[in-house]
Picture 1 (tube, rainbow, N blue to C red):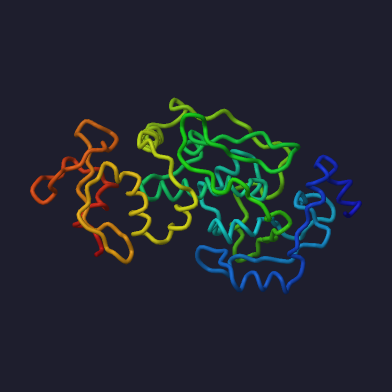
Picture 2 (picture 1 turned 120 degrees about the horizontal axis):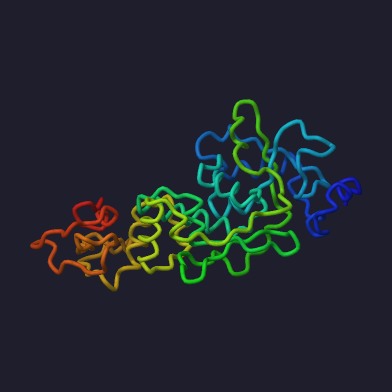
Length: 310
């Protein structure tokens, strides 16, 4: 452990100062990039450089020796297992800022919640916000200034824990730098380990604007705890994702046939809501071929045979 870094970051617990990365050679960085997507669009927009041998994960860019460029550390597991892609979107930047944590400061299980929440919102046609997310999740006080963790708010369970024993990720992080061609890559969120994460009470409905309140109520009143791991796995398999989410309501749906090989439902009865309701009710038409859809909720349309791609 470098004595200079040890003195500069005396506020950090010993375990944090001792955590350095194995990604310390250009060869390792190149091998990682050959097999791993980091960017949503153009991979050349993301530049990764080798970490220094003794560079702790709590290092920032403001103290000597000063880095010539802005940088941030991100655990490799976020890309490999959780499907994280850069640049961070508005919701992710906003949430990191509100919580006052850097990307590497959040436990991977917490990133899994963030990713799965966005997948659910996209599926249901909802625009995610930090207020909505913090209606369902809260930031727990980091133990001895180590990793910060998000947990579900009591009575509002929405997503399962990705991994009850998430291990083997520490000491394997990359150093991402901002170059002239992509200056916004590292803007709008905390880049470096923050000494004081912003612990806040869970949002209440009165804290939300009307649109956020409506969307949170819709998700909450579904009364379903979705499988985080499965949502991440199916994120880019749109039809499979629709089917998977539909299976949570199978006890209330009558289906007519399966596609044997892929087990995708191709002919659902209809899931509808009463005209004065805000949330779809768990009742179905018994004969969709002869009865009309009653005020079909937009996100349920994907389950009708007329919209099936098969």
